[in-house]
Amino acid sequence: LFSVVFKKFVAKTKTNFDNKLIKILHKPIFYSTFFIGWIIAIKKTHNQYEIYENQLIADFIISIISSFMIIVWAIAIFKGFVQFVKWYSKTGSSNKIFQQRMVPLFDNIGKLVIFTGCAYFLFKSWGWDVTGWLASAGVFAIVIGLAAKDTLANFFSGIFIMADAPYKEKDYIILDSGERGYITSIGLRSTRIMTRDDIEITIPNSVIAN
Image 1 (cartoon, rainbow, N blue to C red):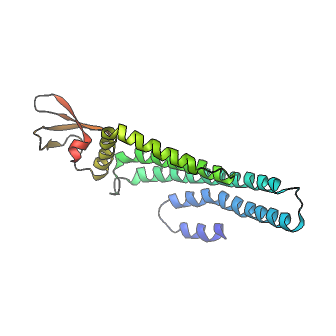
Image 2: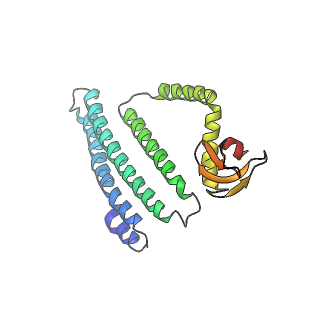
């Protein structure tokens, strides 16, 4: 059903991205359908006929099957995300949501989110309580945020500047504080300006954002 319906649907579109996405999703959907049937069968036979000696064996087999499905889906989502980044990098000039220079940052953040989500669901499939870990991570993040608030302010300001693009390299800008010159580079932490005296100055992105 998935192959017949969706492949005919995406064949009518102009882009090739959705064709690759359907091909990537075919395997995890097939394995999910297959192994969900296995999980239901294991639970039914254990409850009705008590084939297994105890609940631990059944839970162990279900955890293995669940882990396999999570890994298959994580690989598929990762491949789909990579294809999306490649497709977007080719059409980024006509798309105004993100600037072209934001693609590498978006790529790294997306891969980190996929890896973290996969690890989280793997822990959950084996019955491990990750609430304490998440709470510890939250406290650790607060400590890091307070210790490096200036660096984080520059980092997020750099992301907003890249996304909004109020200026680009080789533009001539004048700041309220009096600095003026041509933009030589735009980074995540700071922006560099070449003044009329051929002196390159570095200005934190948080200052420019304000």
